[in-house]
Image 1 (spheres, helix red, strand yellow):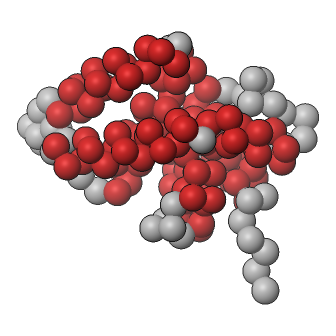
Image 2 (cartoon, helix red, strand yellow):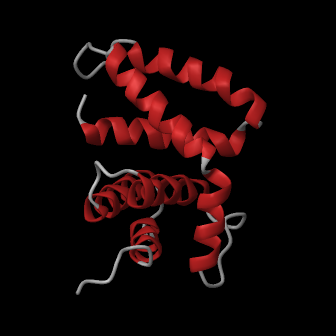
Image 3 (cartoon, helix red, strand yellow):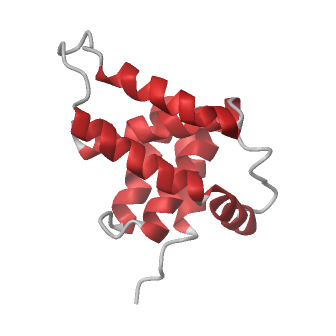
Length: 143
């Protein structure tokens, strides 16, 4: 599974946070990881055990930082609040912002680009532009 595919699976798991109580997310995570290991119609293969471990580990790190990530998103968005945002956009922003701020393996530009692509795929027509505009506020200024 490519990093892009792993990132998309992490997004899908983060999306569930908005629809389940925090206490239920451990069980939801387990069910999700078992589901992605099942063979797909596309290629007959599911996620490997290693892929599932990578997805779970990154998801857990992001989940631990959700209050901090949300506070930072709220600070940078004018006229928007994480409670008012679409669920797709919020999950994508959380993932992208985590990668920008805390994941040294992912360059900021890649984090923004990947977040925009996920927003375009799963969100509304304007989701990609919204995600790009918000995450751009967290990118360091070019010298």
